[in-house]
Structures are given as C-alpha cells and as structure tokens.
Image 1: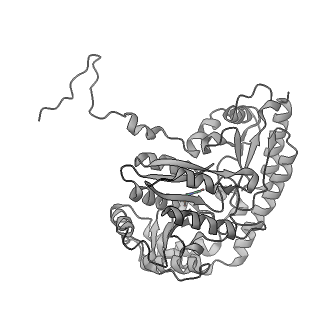
Image 2: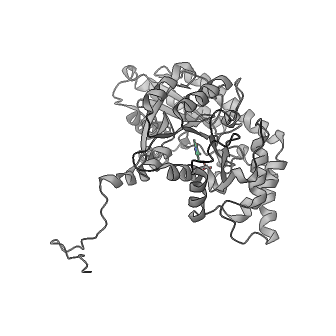
Image 3: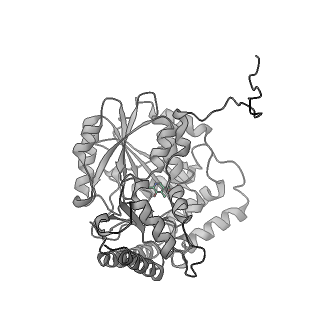
Length: 423
Ligand SMILES: *Cc1c(COP(=O)(O)O)cnc(C)c1O
C-alpha cells in the first residue's frame, strides 16, 4: 500500500490522524478543566492565600486525614512482599468478598464476591459501565446538574446523552416525568448520584422507590453513583439504591476515595445488585467481564489492604468526618444567607458540595457564572466552580469540605466581592 503521508504545501507532514467532529469530545468539559480555567485568573500578586472551594478533595487538610488503620493496612501489604504480583482481572477475591460484605450490611439480601468488580476508583467503574452500554443508537439518561465526567465519557464512546432535571425547589429530587419524557426504546440506563454531587442532597427512601418504579416501567437499569455513600450528616439517612434491586437491576458504583478521604489511592468498585437475576439474559455481565479482561487494575497492594480497611475502620472515624462536614455545611449555609446576590435553595445534607443560584440582575458588570468565578478569583483569590461546567448556567458549586477557617474566610471574601459589584 502506498502511504500518502505526503509533504503538504507548507512543508509540514499531512498525517492520517485528524480530530474530526465525531471525535470532538477530546475537548469535553471537565471539572478539572474548568477549575484550571478559573485559576488562570488568579492574581499572583495578591498576598493572601488562595481559598480553593472549587474541587472536592479535602485530603490536603490535616483534619480530614484518613484513619490510621487504613494507612497501616497499606504499609503492611507493601512490607509483606506478597502483593507485588498482578491482580486477577476482576480484583483479588478477598477484596471482592470484603466489598460485597460491606455493601450487604445495608441491603435486604446478600451480595456475593461474584457480584463485585474492583476498579481504579469510581471513575473506572463509570468508564466500564458507559463503555459496555454504548452501542449504535443507544442513549443514556443523566442528571442535570450532574458530574461532567459522565458526559465526557459517554461522548468518547459515542453514547448519546439525554438529561433529566434535578428540581432545586423540591429538595433536588429527580423530575421523574422528565425521565419518562426523555426516554425512548433506545434508552439503556439512567444514572443517579446519591448523596448528590453537585447538590449536596440525599434522596429519600420514597423517592428512590419511585426512581426504581420509573426505571422498571421503562425497562432500563439504574446506575447508582454512591461514591459519597454514607457521607450523610443531615436529617435524611443515606439509603443505597440496591435496596430496590428486586424492582429494577441496579449497578452500584463506589470507592474509598471520599468516605476515607484517599482519592489518590484509586480504589473503587462496581457492584451488580440484581437479586431476581433479571439481567441474566441481557449479556451485560459478560460484557462487563469482557471489558474488565482488557482493562487495567488498581495496584494489588491497595486491593489487598481493602478487607482490613473495610472491617476495621471504626464508627468513630466516620462520625468525626461527618461531624466536620456537618459543621462546615452549617457555616456555609449560614454565610451564604448573608450574600444577597446568591440564593441557596437547600442546606446540604450529604457529599461535600452545595449549589447556589446567582442573581445576576443584582450585579453590575458580571455577565454570567463563568465571569463571576474568574473575577472572584482575580479580585479575591477564591476559587469556585461555575455551574455551566455542570450543565446549570448561572449557578455556582461551592465545596465546603475544607478547614472551617478557610471556608469562613473564602465566603467572607465572596461577600465583599458581591458588595463591590452590587448595582
Ligand atoms: C469523585 C467522584 C467520582 C470519582 O471517584 P474516584 O473514586 O475518585 O474515581 C465519581 N463520581 C462522582 C459523582 C464523584 O464526585
């Protein structure tokens, strides 16, 4: 075959590879990308510390340091020299069993190790699901506002995305009628994120049941992103979607990243909650296994540490973390009430985030949410995430999982900023 890598007229090579419109998702929106854009506006000459309320990674804060038993487990596994090997494709058996037991504590039935696949953080569990569900013509239903990794990942697999709304004035519950309207015979699944990123909400038992019934009517499975599972500190308890696995098959995605505050350890899972075996003939399990067979795995010694981490982390650690989050959610909500150009529909009860709506007509010379965030970064050295990154223009996402002194300081600066720009 004759190669056509001819010298083009301007003297550069003409390569076969071209980024065309179909592949445009290479430029998709991500939280990291938008936060970086906002951070480019930071004023290097401002002598004050930068208050980072844009990302959800409190691991740098001393008070959010993970539990000693987790650190010890990892150290011991390294020192044992037993885990320098490759791990099996779906994860070490004791790890799969330990995750199955951990998740089963909250379920009316038992998961087995066969139902659990160990992944590189929750992100790879998302990757696995969106990859195996993608086929020509298929579509998936995602929440708006949501977590843009899903949109970006779906685009890379050419899986069509349709959105349903979360309703700010109804505790961020799902617009279930919108779900019915968005779905058609090519819809393969719907995604929920509970506890919620970005809204900090927790779905009630009743609402989750309605979600299950809606999905059942549509004949679609529910993918439940529970990466913030148990980070619930308000009046609504966290209930895993797997509770309704006998109504509709549920694929639960999780990790130790958030509850144990170790996102860099890259350890997550995908659990199939299907007690009535209704997925048996769908082929989805074979598809998951087929993809996991060629996917990379998390580090073996981290996997090996998981059984001890899950079994021995005490309630004391969990309640301390939830206590910290409760306190900062409280401070955040109270301080936001004092900032007149933003409106917070709901005090966060879970995860690490809250959404607030910008009241643009009250502000002078601020075009939109992105403009607000870049100017806030420039003038006050405070970083927050513009809602446009999450599909909700002119809203803002604020992370409250940070030392309360910084949170206080950051929100005070935001208040000063809003006053300075008030009409
Ligand atoms: C952080 C996060 C993830 C990714 O979790 P990792 O375990 O760090 O891969 C997935 N979904 C949501 C909603 C998240 O906030």
